[in-house]
Image (cartoon, rainbow, N blue to C red; front, top):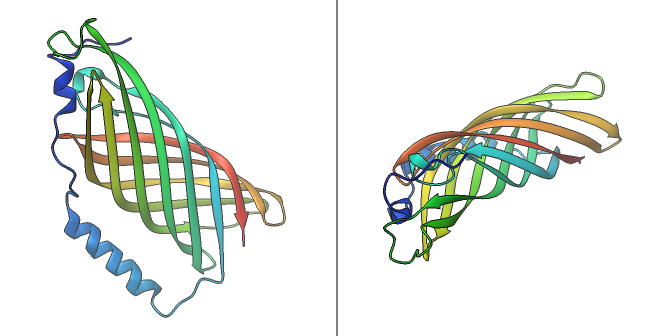
Length: 208
């Protein structure tokens, strides 16, 4: 289903300017993580890369509804304790939706294919434990979310503070290699709207 826009498609592309909201919180958290890690060099860790699916409000107008997006996620974790590490996480998702654009001067057909893409840059602590071949984990991450929308001859982008909570499990295939399943809820405020996007990822983990 593609609910109609309440107004023109140009309303979707309001340019609010690229800026980090709550930047003081982001800065404080980064300083805190650096202080925790000061004087310590992680001796073990892991790197992950895989397919990622996300469902959420990628487009900026409430009338556009939710949208299914596909992309990838990658992360690197350094362990400072056997059960505690710091992870840096990066993802990209892309999707599109057909919306009405009755009053947009650049839209002559009455509808426009609007595309939305989003990058999340996140960092934070991860706690894990090993149970046989399984390693379940939970994590709390903060960072930035950058979204770009384009369609009907217009492009706009916005940047927001982002926070994520989630977890997953690694299944050991052989020494140093595992499969991962992961789910997170990522909160961001983009184009004047706040929302929580569900991110589901799966892929290969290389441990070092």
